[in-house]
Length: 405
Ligand SMILES: *Cc1c(COP(=O)(O)O)cnc(C)c1O
Image 1 (cartoon, rainbow, N blue to C red):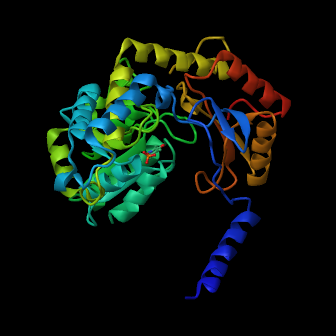
Image 2 (cartoon, rainbow, N blue to C red):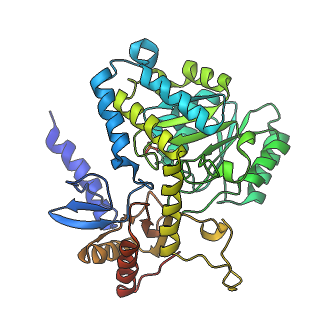
Image 3 (cartoon, rainbow, N blue to C red):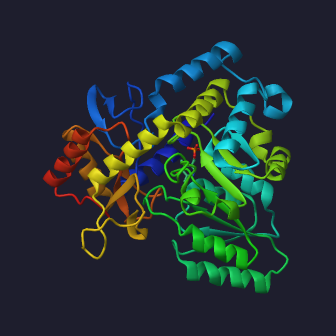
């Protein structure tokens, strides 16, 4: 064994990352996911979690997970197609389909596995995949793995998207064309113009997949996601969501037609060749969907938007004091607020400054965002109090940091 040289090689790679302020390390958290977490013996006010509705610690959801362990055990034993298709997975999918208002839904062990499996099942080397420049890394990886021709349009740029669709229909009239976008972008909090994208995909006869990881449970009258809020759910062939963010559990899912779900069961490799998620995760997600749909869920969601507005009061660009329409430059309210600093070292320093003041806000750097676009990423949740938000605002002011982009 040559492990001395092996480690030496890797150490060089790590040293290069340190040099560029891009080295990352894990921080051990000794408390449950909540607005207060203990790291290195210090309790910090946490503005980093995607547990937007505070469901990771909700009593009835934890209880559902415990009951599932008692009834179905800790593990699921095999892939769903072998013998691991336990009742909790079926219950979850029925509740997801009903929640999303689709014929069917299929769950995966993570959002990452959902994207890889689904895109890989739908496209091959003769097809074309068209991505917004800022889609989540799992979509980028899926697009590379599926071997389709990959085209990227400038972030939220409809003209650029249309130019690619026109090119595809002229040069590759027989190819399947799949457009994929996040509905709310994970590092910017901006919304995609889903109505306009859906209109373009209709005009050019493409397919549309929308990743609602940061919108499921948060937007729309039934909290189905941004597609519901914008009234375009029926135009989206493939609706993707995650179970680990606002739903407080773990996993990912696709909602759509029965045919799509059947197709994925047969063709999505991350579904077929992977052990089914543990029963507790499925049961927790089912309970979370029930919670989100309830009056309590509606109330919790309203609380979230109230906290988000307290952090960043939305005023119209006209400066007339009117509230802006439903984040970022697209004007939608968002639970994700990037404080873009630019330099990697400065961003780390800002995060350290906040930590010294008892606040945990992560420094997000390349490759999560472009080089030179490093930022603090603030996420506000329904579990924060108005006082928590005031503490964050005060600390940002003390450090002379912006409260928005
Ligand atoms: C987090 C995230 C995913 C991945 O979901 P996991 O369940 O964490 O694997 C996919 N897409 C977006 C936009 C995300 O933010």
